[in-house]
Structures are given as C-alpha cells and as structure tokens.
Length: 444
Ligand code: AMP
Image (cartoon, rainbow, N blue to C red; front, side, top):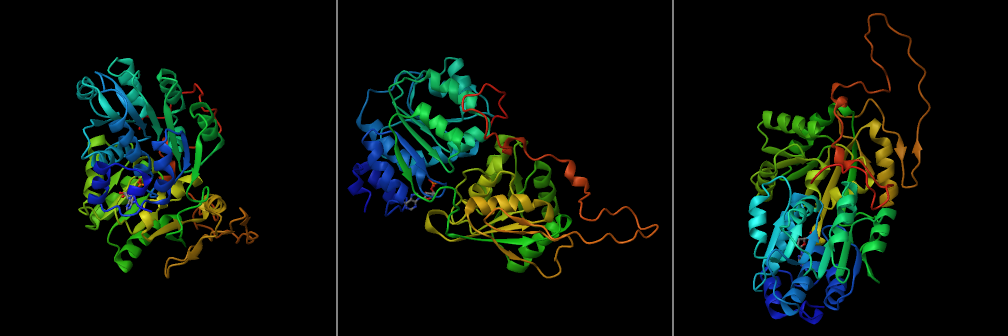
C-alpha cells in the first residue's frame, strides 16, 4: 500500500515524501479514502498512530479540489483540539502537509492575545485549528463565521470532554451548518463520547486501529515499587544508573512538577517543567527546547503534555500514577510512536495501588514489577492483576508503643506535600451528559 494508491494528489504526495512517510499507517489506510469520499468518521485511534495525517491530508485535498474560495472571516475546515500545545502541534503538521497547496491555515487558542488572531481571520482561513474556548470567543466577537464550513474534526474528543469542554462543544455545534462532514478521533470511547458521536456524526464509518483501551504494544512497561517519600531519590538514582538521555516525566500536581524540577536543577540536571499555571509562552518554550534535545528531563502534568508528539522519545516515567486510568495510555503513548519501541516506567507507592489496579484492568495486563536495591519499600504495594483484584495482606499486629518514639502512624502516609491537589483538569468528568450546562473546568 502506498499513499498514491489511496488517491492522494501529487502536491500532497510530495509533501509526505519530504517528511519521510513511505507507507501509510493503518489509520491512514482506512481514514484517507473514507474522508476523500466525504464520509463521517468515528475513529478509535490513540496518539502515535499517525492519526493527524489520517484526517489532515485528505481534508487538505478536499479543500484544494472542491468548494468556493474562502471569504473574509470564514473558515472552510475546523480542527478542534483540547490544548494549546496540541493546537500548535497539529497546525505544524498541517502546514507541512499543505506545503505545496495554495491553502491558508492557522491556529487559534487561549492564553495569548486575541487581537492578532482577529486580524489574521479577517481575510478568512481555509483550515483553522482551534481550542474550543478561544474559538467561541472569536465567534462571539464576530471575528469568525461558519457559513462556509464544510468539515469539522474533533481531535482527542475524549480529552475535550475530560477538560470540561462539553458546553463549548454544544455551543459550537449549534453555530455550525447542519450539512457538513464530521470526523471524530478519540483514544478511548466512554459513553459520553458515544453520545457526542451520536449527536454530531451522520452515518459514520467506524475505524478502530488498535484494540479499544489497550496501550500501544510497542512500549515496554514496568513498575518500580517504592515508598512515596523516596520517589525523587529513586528517580535520580535510576537516571544516573541507567544514564537516561531524554525523559518525559509525569507528575500528578503542579507542585509535584515544580518540586521535582527544582530538585533536579539543584543537582545540575538539565530539567524543565510544564503545567497549567505557567504562561503559555513559557510552556511552549520548555517544550520546544525539550523537542530540540536542549532539555534532558521535562516534567509535566497530564494537561500540559497531552497529545504531544516528540520524535524518538525513548522513555516516559510516571513519577506519580494518573488519577484517571485512561491517562496512563495517553502518557505512555508519548513513546513507542509510529512503530518505534519505547519504555514506560512507573514509580508506584502503596497508596497508588488502586490506580495501578485500574490501569492494569484497563490495559488488560499485569505490569511487571521491580524493586530497586536499597529502595525496597517499607510500605508494601499490595498485589494487583488485570482482573482488578487488589490482594491485601492481613495487617501485622501493632507493636507496643515505645514511649518517646514519636507519632509515626504505620500504614498511613503523613506527608507535607499531600496538601497539594492534583491539577484540576485531570479530574474525570466521565459521567456527565455530553451537553451539560455545568461550569467549565478550565481553559486549555
Ligand atoms: P500522530 O499519531 O498523528 O501524532 O503521529 C505520530 C508520529 O508519526 C508523527 O511524528 C508523524 O509525523 C509520524 N507519522 C505519521 N504518519 C506516518 C507515516 N505514514 N510514516 C512515518 N511516520 C509517520
């Protein structure tokens, strides 16, 4: 199978060749002809499968071959994504694919001034990548019209709902022309996503390129059990012992990111962090430097790092396990991309056992456990397996209290860092109806 046999035109073939894409990935093989034929799509494709080209390339072909010229303040195709980083990344891919086509493309997102975006939209844009909040702001300020819109793409739809964008999506949906092509991509398929698909798609073709909710099998995954208070020490030990070159590290909270980065920088390790509290420009700069291998360790929360494509990333470390099991799949999807092999290591402490169990159940595998010498946990992580069972050993009888021995509470963690809440936007909102009217959790 080649891209030419999928019916792509020469300017696109040339761009793909320049990028070194020789053979279409499975999602591209299925999506490209369907999009060219004008079908709606509902695609279960995790990040790293080549899904961006799967929708963007045929979309660009349709824009180049069909439809009238774009008029002022209009868009002909819209790609909605959950985060600013993803908007930049998807737009960068689109720009590369469209290199030899006479089409205009642009990305809009929050956290930066709206005025330059309004100016840019005046002439109209053939293909716009946008986060939902900023798109609505632009629409409400009459900087955007949807009367020419022919295609809508919802990329990482599950994440958009997780981030609380259901209300924005409902409002955008109301403003769009009824007659249009809609493509929905999601790594995971909850009931809320199916409901969204039911409302937005018309007789969609279903594409599933990897088994539902199963992590990429090109990623070697294992767990190191450790006491919570020794995680940073263990991370630094593993970093040095294994001479890790480039690592993306996930921490649960913004505080957790800052603390680890500070510790690493204190040891002259070249580290930086990204999370929702940092200004957009700082986040993007840290990311760009990491991509350019100018930063060795990038510590991130789930929100900041979702969907990012970093070439040849060999290793992801879960410093903390995610609260939502599906995020584990997204996190480890940063490595082992487009067929390359990768490694994902999770540092797991006793009070993360339920998260570990949920991940094993979701990925239908029991993760291999290791214990690092001199880091054996005092607080044992109970056994887990893919059935969701957590095997708790009977509690040891309490030792008699020794007077003056302090207040150590065995079996329960008492740590100063615990007060910091996880980044709010990674809390699940899976049970809410798709078009609920509740408050939005955060802007991307
Ligand atoms: P995505 O899942 O869209 O984020 O893509 C993951 C990575 O695979 C990106 O770096 C793409 O540039 C790359 N990629 C996508 N399609 C192909 C292909 N057919 N051949 C080689 N690399 C590809």
